[in-house]
Image 1 (cartoon, protein in one colour):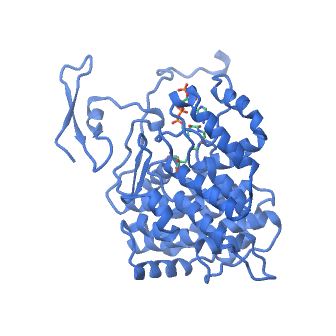
Image 2 (image 1 turned 60 degrees about the vertical axis):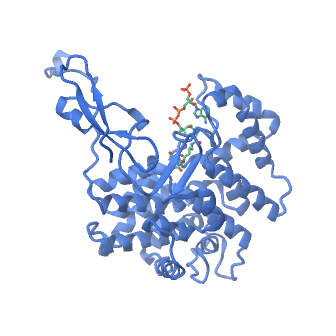
Image 3 (image 1 turned 90 degrees about the vertical axis):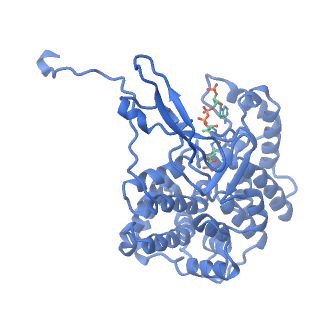
Length: 429
Ligand code: SDX
């Protein structure tokens, strides 16, 4: 914290208001506006564009420079040198694990990969063509009906068990939500495989023959999970924090995060990007779509472009673009038409005055779909993949809040409705 202050002079209030300013280790200072309520005033910041809702030590983003740090480590280095479960450990505990710590962490995750057999029948209530995100909202919320032994959020051990259960079971539930749509049998996890291999085994394996998991695809899958692991106070993480602030159990909070992620402005964008690239269909059509994105009267937006925080390249998009090239090359896919359209679209947009002036760059969702499609993941599962990767970030933020001092989140409003008036009977209306 700092001893700097902001002095606020408000028309109609004689005495200036002094507000403390707090400084973090990185990023902008914050003005603590808690004292305004006593003066009968609120701040007003729809969309929380200029609001720091909490203090956190997990992830730092510098939107102007395109920097993303997880516990101080740059995302580029983690994507190159680390793996998803090691990054999970880092996000949860604040330090990279020793070899022994990592082995124990991975082994504990393996102990929780299966789900209660009753959950298998739970799926039967859904139509076979249900969107997998709709299924995930339901089944993850339902986990709290199965784990009454780890719902005491004030108990660190309970929080730890819930964290392992969620990280371990999300891939199992995600694969089940896909298998259910195909009519194929659910696959049990195979704990001899690593996290990403196990997910691909449960997605594409069948009980009649051994799974033959491509190491190239498994590495790409692991990197996609890693790149989605956490991203500061985004909409779904803020949803998890707000739900958690009421004391709701961790499974309910993560289900709330999944619901918030689903929107096309957030995690639903990866599915929307693929649909947009397929709608564009050919490089010759790009200009008309860019024109639509610039037209104020057209609600169409270039999906996978723009970001509330990044006003420079999203560093994850750069890594994802490089990974897309590598995966397609290793798969021997010479020219993927959708990747060609994506690259040309990026080139055109980045040289267009509208996108330059509004600082719109490709975000994490722009290239992820290309990789997921190359791995064989159906488009409807793209946001589910995002949710699997982001679960550790949601849990890390939830745990950071619950293990510290917190109050229930309860924003106020600027009321512009009717002033008080008397009831009018129906005969008088
Ligand atoms: C994610 O917050 C996070 O960290 C999210 C995320 C994470 O890891 O959790 O990074 C994941 O959600 C990435 C974003 C995925 N969404 C999309 O790709 C959807 C397309 N992008 C936009 O809808 C938009 O850019 C947002 C939602 C991402 C950001 O919205 P903001 O910050 O509210 O910005 P805005 O809508 O106010 O846009 C500013 C201006 C507007 O023009 P003006 O009103 O000022 O004239 O830029 C324009 C917008 O019209 N604009 C776009 C655009 N994005 C913004 N114009 C065309 N195409 C776009 N994609």
